[in-house]
Image 1 (cartoon, rainbow, N blue to C red):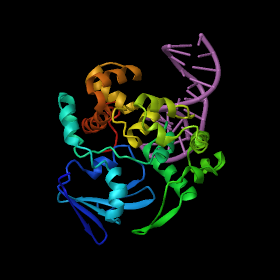
Image 2 (cartoon, chains in turn blue, orange, red):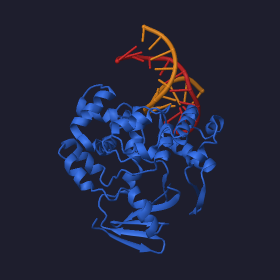
Image 3 (cartoon, rainbow, N blue to C red):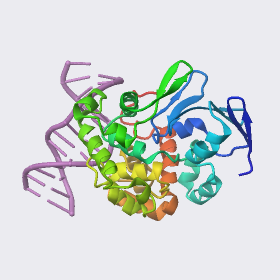
Image 4 (cartoon, rainbow, N blue to C red):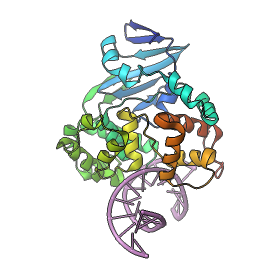
Length: 300
DNA sequence: CGGCAGGTTAGTC
DNA sequence: GACTAACCTGCC
């Protein structure tokens, strides 16, 4: 990478970091523990650390960290070794995606902790983002380790499988997970007793990763694709939620289409980068307000 | 305040 | 194999 990384008293500053837009990274549904501060920066928790991220005059400022943590955790977490220029070049061959890339400029797919991602996306099923965030926060407060206070807020790590295994369905209900409590426990069980080894399945093909993950109750096609894409470097995973379905039908298929067929189409069209394509399309859809035409009285 | 959003399961055909 | 009601909570 040709960018300039400097350490300062409370963190790291990077000049000339291409393809890094905090808004698009944190606001595209891939992560749930990042929150916007009043100054426009984002504070979040990952791998037991609290970090603040801000883009200012083309520089990226990582606050509350140091060179060691940056190298050991954040470099990989933010997928900084990946050349998004190459991905954008390939995807730009499609004229629709060329437009989408403009709106989603600076998006990166994070490499998150697999267990946290697994539980988070079990919670995401049939759920809305603010509620998902709330549940994950409550679970972290209740079962995770206290990390520190940052700008007046207390931060907790997401629990390990061991820490979460003491939970009961009743307790999880208090964390607002609704009917998903039993799925969370089934997932935790499967990881704890070694039925599914997340580090091991990482090396499988996307299709086989999904198959392994779907052995867990509450994990189907969409959720397993999200876990593969957002925590296991499976850039060819293509999670199809209602929004992706709408976007794909609107731009390409022009008619009601089953997820299986959408996946097939995406595979032909975008190939090994279809996971990234999905992220860019999401922004294009948002910009154009696709899906809102039926109910105009929406936000924004 | 009733209606609705949102993936997966489990049941029915 | 395809189709669909039910699941829980918060927001409109």
